[in-house]
Length: 268
Image (cartoon, rainbow, N blue to C red):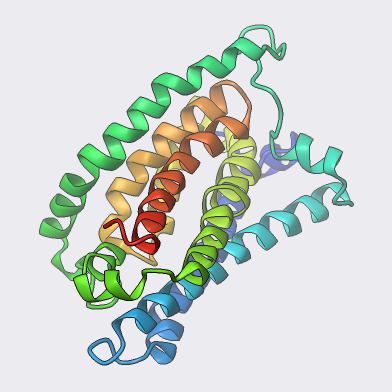
């Protein structure tokens, strides 16, 4: 590890700055999730769908804040928000060869094994990890109205969602900010390139752990989110391309959007 002075000199963040950016994301999300959402949501028993919609709106605001935070970071450091500036600062470029630094299109093929690994973690290990995490920390169990799967799994809600394209549009907006403009631009785009000065070769591990801990909005999923964060941070770091993690993370959104379309079309 390097000290604070040297990390600032070579453009890397100090530990305090890394944690400060993490806190700006995590605390804001926690306040909206645990203070604002309960205050705004209708009674769960009387209007379960309304509570679910409110939850999606609140989480969308959280994701939009992550995007704004990433843009604030770029502007403060680079002085403008031109696409060329954003692209360079946030690693929004073609994957680079780890040895030569040259961009190579064939490196996109690395997305395939990491997509498979993402599916294994999200679909296969996710429920197991969530169950194990909650068994260790039972106070992290989701209260009523917080678990999207529980809400969408209700036959009553499924019937109400038939033809509800407005709900699909809202979910699509949240998905775009969640897996691209929000979480990925902030954690893999803004933070990851600046963490090497403190964490060295393990910067991607630290990034994944911080990503998991950021999920105070749904603490029952912290462990699974951290594991997913590791899977997404590694290729982004190795190939110096946030697009790698964007694609991997977005696979989650594509899967969920297909489920929502099925509900809206009445195919569930």
